Length: 376
Image: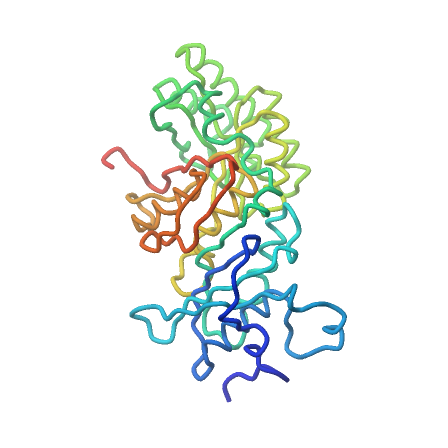
């Protein structure tokens, strides 16, 4: 039977190929695979509708607002070369559809409901253009690359760190010992693994104490600034802030957060706390592959990286072009630029669908992650 839009085809309202994009619009590029028999124009219009003002039928309350002012619009469609029945659908959203300074609201609108839509076989958000007017409503990273280097007094080279292994099972005392040996041996940073929170074998308060001891001892012996990413991720925002405050009290310069499992609301809360309290914030991307690994469905990591820059973080794991986990070289380099540069030109060969101007929002330090070893 295929797909029926309801009372009225979406494309009559939401497919507008002659639309002139505004500077204040949020733009999205979706990789769209329609169900057999559904025209791409209808499908693109359905995506625009369902992620903005539309519903399955016309309602009398439509007359109480101006759809022209508030609706999302599918303004361009291009077939994906080499793929059968797959298109890039470009959608423009008016700025007023989004709450200021809320990545949570941005994602709830753009990727909230539409991915389960019947007219689609699959849908992937490839890129978002965040207009300067919206960027300016976010604090962004607590400090950014330049301020971090100033705090550490380390310039002109990569920073070198490692994660303490085994990641689960060590006592706090032995964990601190391993941290000391790594920092004393020449590393700038060591790191809690993403799932080290506060388990029975090592409660967070004990870990924080012994890690702080290791940092001070290695700093005294090397004359260098050292740090360890203390994972503040917790079951509630209140507990997370308590852990961040404890790290600050111990004099540790940096904390860490799992931003996807912790959620954007928690992450933005922590980023604000870190700027107010001079803490650096390291961001781990645990759970990203659940969202970004499928080529035809989900969301590309570059969108998650842009969202993190808005929400706030000084470091972000960005994969690598070598190592144990998947990563395509040019595409990886493309979103690394999106994380740290101020202005990035559209470049389809690197997966960058839109020119992005961050209007001086601090940059995020990309962390080459995922099984890097000495032979790389």
